[in-house]
Amino acid sequence: MRMKRIRYFPLLLIICFFVGSCSTTPPPSPEADPNVAEDEKRLWQRAAEEQALLESSGVIYRDQALEEYLHQIANNLQPLEVREKFNFRIRLIKDPFLNAFAFPNGVIYLHTGILSRLDNEAQLAALLAHEMTHCTHRHALRAFRGLKNQNSLILSLKQTVARIASTGDLLDLFGTTASMAAINGYAQHFETEADMVGLKLMAKAGYEPSEALRLFEHLKQELEAENLKEPFFFATHPQLQKRIENCKGFLDKLKRPEAQGIKNREVFLDRIQQVLLYNASLDLKAGRFRSARRGAEKYLTIRKDDPRAYFLVGEILRQRGELEDEMRAKNFYEQAIALDPSYPDPHKAIGLIYFKEGAWMLAKQSFESSLALSPHMQDRAYIQGYLQECTKKGIAP
Amino acid sequence: MKKLLCLIFLFMASCASFGQGGNPSQSESSNFTLEFPEEWRKLTKGKYLMITRDGAFSQYILVQQRHVDRPFSHTKKKINKGMLPQEAAEVIMDEITSDRAILNFQVLENRPAAVNGYNGFRLLFTYKTKGGYKFKTLYYGFVQGDWFYSLRYNAADGRYCDKDVETFREVLESFKIMASRSA
Image (cartoon, rainbow over all chains, first blue to last red; front, side, top):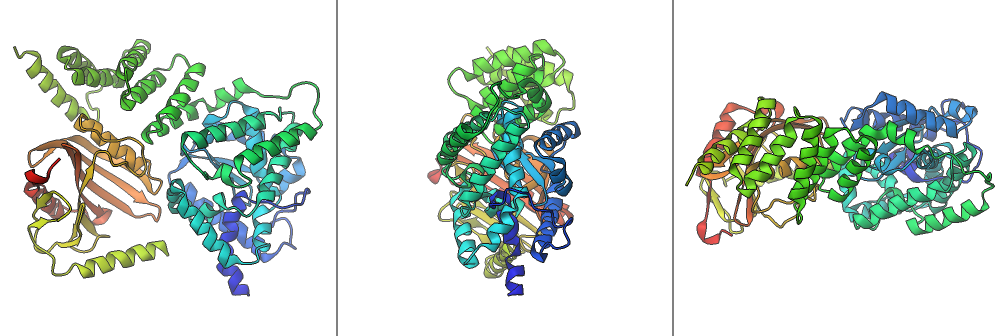
């Protein structure tokens, strides 16, 4: 029996990510309570091991000031006695897809994709409060202990994972257990509880609870845009629409002050601005042009003077290549150059458009500008080749 | 466990390929031919061809042919017929960097290059796997008609060597597209 527990112990970890319990009073953490069972202690140990792997994998987005801000929001949501038991830490993963998950020891991972999609601090609070509830209410441990047939569960989870194409990579990166946890379908009441307790926490902290609904709307849009049937964060059951309805029901019952709660849009956007730009570039690499453009343009509403953002929108349009995209891209490149004439990349990108149009002299000028500004650019061999061709074709009768 | 299965698969593939070494190589389902030395063994064939001397975890040369309409696994971008080699190289890099299993991807070189007369690009890059293994890859790619061809030499970081690069160069020089079956 003991061996069986150990064998399936990694599964505990997975389930931890998205499941929950019925207790409303947060239990003590394993380290603080000498009476805590061995399996929970091992769970925390295993969580620490998987986190160490994540931290050294190169996927962590590091920004100390931003982490401090996220930490501060998290602290505002929980009373001191809970914060003393769970040393909550919020970490960011470089990933454009909308997802978030919590380890049982209070470490919460947010994808840059989901942080970029949020509109304000209240939505962030809703997300963090939800994830923190998974930790404080020991959802994973309770779910695991409640399983009657662990073999069937594992088989079912593996089949679920296999059905979802976009989770395949996560299996490699986070490990089978973690990945399965993120999409397991055994804890509808846990998710419901996390939504409900999360709403109460954010309202108590003074945030506008109705913003939680906007979080779900963002997730729904992502689901539709990506044509995903069971993406992780929102597929953790109940289904997204059901969760939206639940959330509306909770909001109706919630005792709320007459004044609108805190949203803190400006502060939030100011703090996450660099994530916005970075994540938009990840979206572009993934060929998620719509998401990339949304992120870059959102950044431009905050920082209208950043040539990198104009260049990025230009790149999104040029690489998407729909009707009139190249013309629009040129406009953005020109705006980037107007803001910073010494920025080589937009010169090069305009050169590529002219080159493909057969406007040899204009292409030549742009390429020469880019090379003059950055003589050692990594792709200079291409530029030199284009210049030779421009010269050859430009002087041809 | 997954890693172990991969190792077993590659080991079995290596064993099964004995007796298939030498040149030339031509597959029924691909439209290219190439030559490789006797001491290198063929592991797979079809739309792609993998050869190795010491086993795929040490080094391999992989040649692939894919239709331009075929989507990639990790990026939604596509390679199209009108692309410049530099643009095609960018799609390949984006496909690799969007793969969550590839960590610490670093491009050491990105420049135009030809494969036996076909104009394309050449990438030299390194990466790590989740398990911490480091690899180095020399990658050539080009578009010809409706097909994108890629030829790469991949080796564990410590096994990447001039001798194999020279073998790879010979493979590149021998690479031919069969005219009757192209496009």
